[in-house]
Picture (cartoon, rainbow, N blue to C red):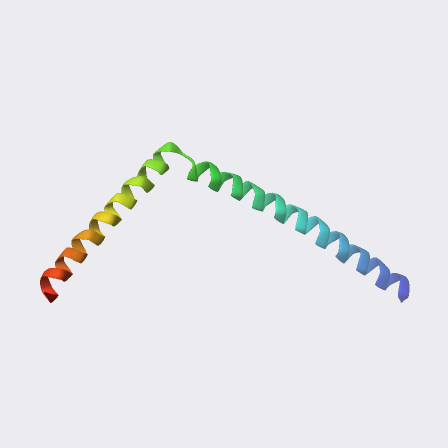
Length: 70
């Protein structure tokens, strides 16, 4: 009984280690792809445009609120 338990424990340990390593590798792939996408010039341009539009919308909303409540 005891040797069987040791074999099962070793198999479980090996599966855990191999699974963790594969999971880490996949995480690194996803991280690399996300970083590459985030630093893409077109994406940077879109982020900059979105920030400008956000600021413009805030200013317009503030102006409208000032008109309504003054």
